Picture 1 (spheres, rainbow, N blue to C red):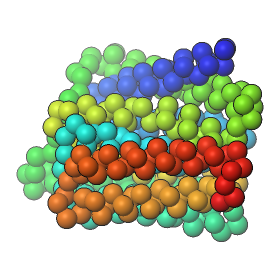
Picture 2: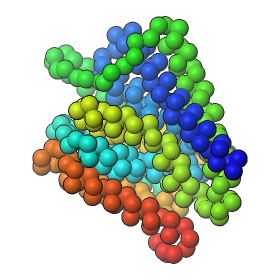
Picture 3: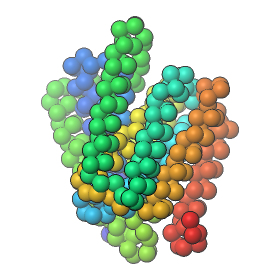
Length: 319
């Protein structure tokens, strides 16, 4: 029972910590007159990915590599199928053509890169982790450059509502939020490992289910609220940005700290992530929006995937 209580407390710290971190960092960025688009696509996306970062890095340091990589993959699958699927139930997700041609394909490319790196030698080493981090810096620079061009061209870009905080509260929010994220990440990994051992679950299954769903709650809350406020592009942008950050930043940091062994199941899950990403791209390409029917189909796919990985962990499937 204690492990479950610690798990819940850890998730609360992760979610609230990410919330405070985003508010504080976004307010600082505003005070420094950083363009709103850059704030939304960098600070907010990084903030909502902070729980995944904390859990995967903690798992990597502890040597729980199966949980580290599975958390990244599972979070991305959850973000894509469940978060986008849920958002589409409230309001059609209207997507800009530029997003479909640039950011979305790039998010698929990051998953392909991780799949290739993992398939070669069935591991991702420190050097490859640094390569992922370099790719992250490239992506960040690309976004800043694109945002700057958009601002110079006079394009109006919304980044959502942000709290206006005093300088002292900004600092307290950032420091307190990061502290809560770090502590919460350790609590989640420790308790999840205890639960896994108790029920005979593998680290991969725990990472794909308990950890990935829990650490993806900030993305889900942020995106659903945005969708309900008719800010559909912001909702999808948060998902795509978070997925890219998860692979390049979270995956890169985790593997740079400790090389991660990749299993056949990890490769299957990465292949599934790429497949559902392509499926969503096809769904929205023509009409540039994800409608309720498409959202429902994505939720059904996720439910089937959950059944598959649970049965796979019991040895029911050989692939």
